[in-house]
Image (cartoon, rainbow, N blue to C red; front, side, top):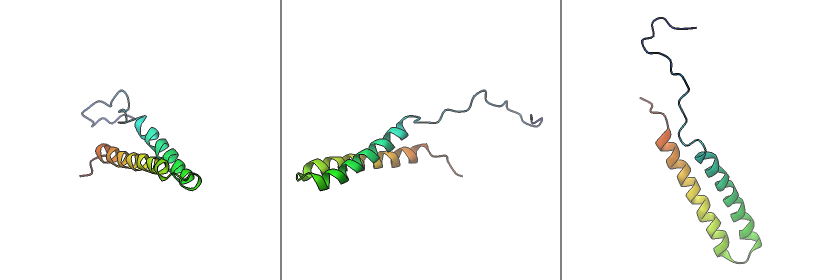
Length: 76
């Protein structure tokens, strides 16, 4: 139903969500690197390998936080 009191026309298409494919890829990388960190920390005697995956997990988590903070809707 159209609104006769609306001044502006409705947009033709829905606005594109920012970072459409970035966020799922970051989540996937976070889960894979966290799982690899857990598995390799118990299975491999070398702590450097599991630490590298832990660092990747921390970077992915930080990138997800930054992406969320930059693209959230302004609440005012």
